[in-house]
Image 1 (spheres, each protein chain N blue to C red):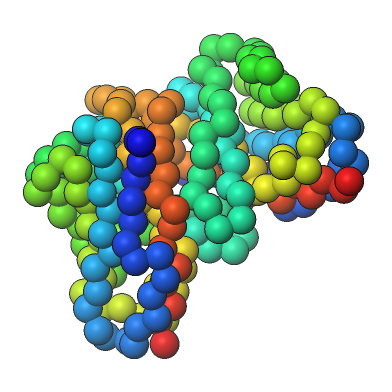
Image 2 (cartoon, each protein chain N blue to C red; image 1 turned 30 degrees about the vertical axis):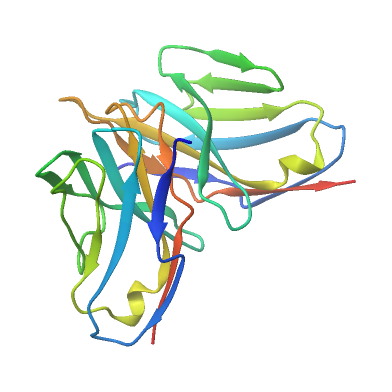
Length: 113
Length: 113
């Protein structure tokens, strides 16, 4: 079955880069996603990458996908205190129009001023 | 404003007392899902719906029911809640099965005593 793993906690200083890592087991993933959850809020889709891509950049966010190692990472440049949140990686797979999404356990990012 | 609205946000109930958590979206999305979030387990899908009157089980459907009589609403029903259903519940909607534009509700924190 699908399994998505993340480290539980990451602490960085404001202004530094953060790198959040994720590993997944299913090689038939179609999309891989990064979600952000702020305290008391729902999940917000930050970015996603199609499985045939290696990299995607969106302003301060860079997603790297190593399909051979089944490793996904999210780099946040110039990390700000507003980036403090739980970050979930997720993968989707399926056919027939619906992509079933499996989430990781989440990484809590703490940004120290 | 595009949004997914869940009610109630907080609920404490007793074992065996039927309850319904409502979910409504104003974006005319076809796909809707329910997830539960538990510490150390990330989000797990309970049920999903691909359109009106089309629903299917997710990874942890036991003890839950759903219905999709209208496109905008996707209520989650607990016929006989038990303490192991104490959790944080999220509803999500998406215009496509790829979930690349998924929107999440604010969450419902349910405690069953």
